[in-house]
Image (cartoon, rainbow, N blue to C red; front, side):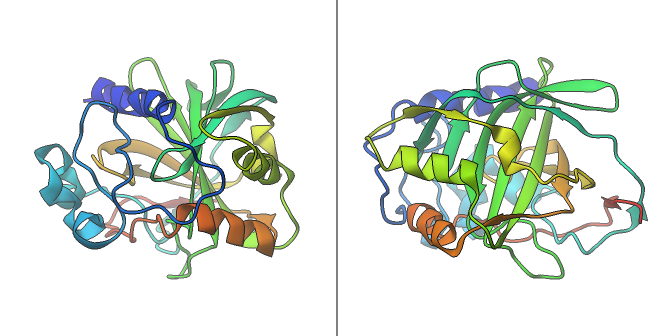
Length: 261
């Protein structure tokens, strides 16, 4: 199963290269291309293809309804505390950026990683949700970015960062500017560490992919500290993505670890 999850993740990278002209489009329709390049059932965020119906669209998506460790969750449901030693080794470099029908995604070549519990995960891609998928006391944030990492064995680790309105973010500006200059996938230079807070204290729990097939076993780490984007950047990204956040899922008494005070 873990290798299947990784295959799905990697296939989404190749699907990006087949995207149509993007520019800075208006919000996507619910019939955008699937995250998989293998003819998986179409899904979206509205109507009969929205989150409430994902499990009915394909047998491959049954975990979207049957799973007991689904993501996202409300981070206020903390039931333990402790420090997590999360080490991120990111560096600036060339990335391929495109809108893939569901999100704006940047794909990375090998060389960037996350390390936790003496395990190393390679950074594969990052993508955005508007509004945030994780919430705090039922309150969503205007943007959430997910850094998706994988091991060769197929384990997944996702680092989530929540945005608040404030000063403009230079790396988000790079992404939005790149999408506005030419159609199709765009290669540009990006420093992913510019999308991270200085304090990497995190909430930690076991969850799932937040899009079909909603596979479980994902190591989630959501930064407690936030970063900012300007009001104009928030509006611009929302114009591209529309509302592409899966609703909060049941906690089901999972261990949710918060940073120690």
